[in-house]
Length: 297
Ligand code: GUN
Image (cartoon, rainbow, N blue to C red; front, side):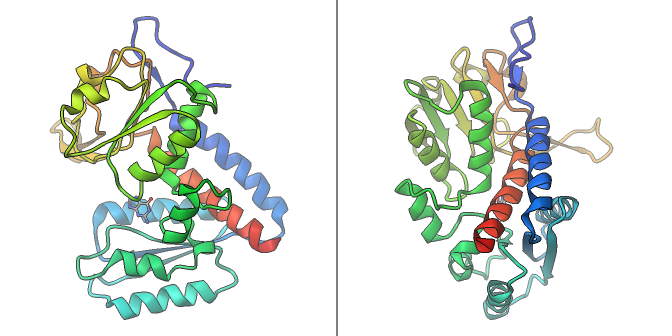
């Protein structure tokens, strides 16, 4: 079944319904959890009072609870010291009821994310951010825990193209450790021909126009314009930015990195919200369940 096959006859792109696909995946996770014999345990750690991070962390904790996981959330003050945060991570590493640890990024400026991530047991690093897991992914080691957003994006791409991307050109805009870099590796391992573009790329629109699969992971509202999109391309929008919108009660609207209203040439596209976002959470749950299953043998 593909959730991307409902292309409107007007020539508008098919919407890739990440919310529906994520729901199918989490239904499966709930079934597997019920028969596993141990409760997968997920700990999410939030430092400081960034509003968007608080919303994301709460969504992750709630989803874990809804799936029957052991779900704990540590909310620490913005002034938390590195030593205090490392002590929380060490406790979670040692806790046999916890199989997955996620420290929400970004951290307050006085904390070094690399130091904190390095302290997480790689077997519990369900974000896939550790050097160990990044290295495993880079060399194609199947024991890698893969970062959730690229894993979710690949699943969405699979609904359109299947698992083998031979002969397709993929362009990833963005080179972050959380999304752009692992995304490019996964696309390449699926046999796509991959370009990583970024802020120093010359003639970014021309590079983007080569893409049969275009992944935008920059975090700049509607940066990718309609004429950057090759006709028929599959467009994956990882960005989420809030822009002013007087017509909304909140005075704000969520938009992606793609100028969605201009993207009529695309063959298929993920909406924001309701595209990649729900898949990220579903994949976090799957990574945690898999970590628990590995621990249980
Ligand atoms: N901040 C935004 N997305 C993520 C994510 O996937 N993991 C973590 N740890 N922090 C994030």
